[in-house]
Image 1: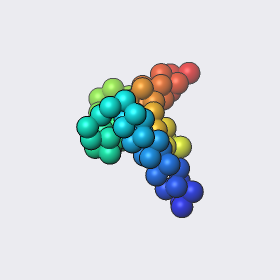
Image 2: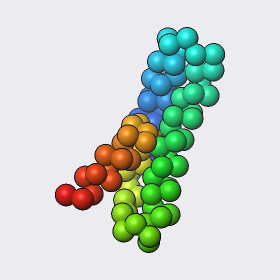
Image 3: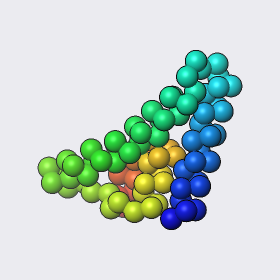
Image 4: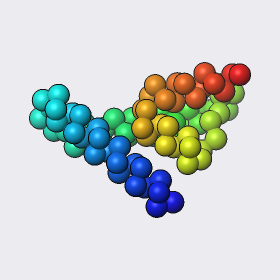
Length: 83
């Protein structure tokens, strides 16, 4: 569990530094929003699962992918779910 939190903190710092180098005025806020979008996309996908028959099991791997990659990561997991 602590390794998972360390990885999440590492990517939060990486996202913050990337946003700061791009000239963003609030790099920590933008990094937080990027990571939160992935979690919300995973949550919405699982909330509408009874209607769409698309479900992504919540595990450390799926949470990590959704946090690190954001919405494109969740879309990739949905696409891979069909195969």
